[in-house]
Image 1: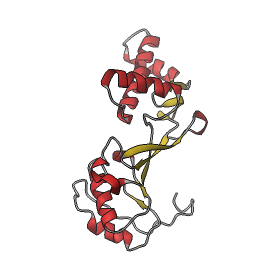
Image 2: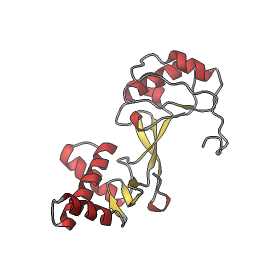
Image 3: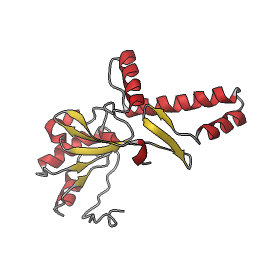
Image 4: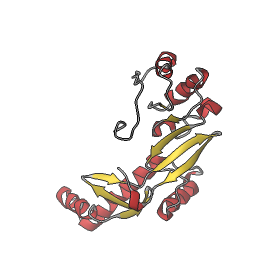
Length: 196
């Protein structure tokens, strides 16, 4: 896909889930003089990698994944600024159904919801609607009801015009940047430009 988009991958270095020192992989990547670095790690590895990447002299943009969210980058401070990632939800989304969820979540828990809460909320409501429409807890009845419900788009915590394609939920999605200790919403998809 990178080639189709005119992107040249200059280096790709895998690491273990237990890696804590990224200096060698970072050195390998930076030796290729990249315009952009992608750091696809899990949770607490992100601030370590970002700090070591900045210490190695790289000050350019970084593409990550949603494992960088949920405050995971906070320990890296300013070193984490400039990491960008795509996700299925961010509390700053403007969709009315998303903001209704954010308000209810804040009222109940006193904090902003993470993507996991939004995903669970929409999944639970989908199942609840299927149970109600099935009028039964019979497995086959619920399965048939879910199949029928999946044929119509719906609005939820993850945005508007949510729909199912090949048993995958297609959501509008967002792009978030970590800057100055905060997650900044850079882009919010709409129902018309939904992506899996």
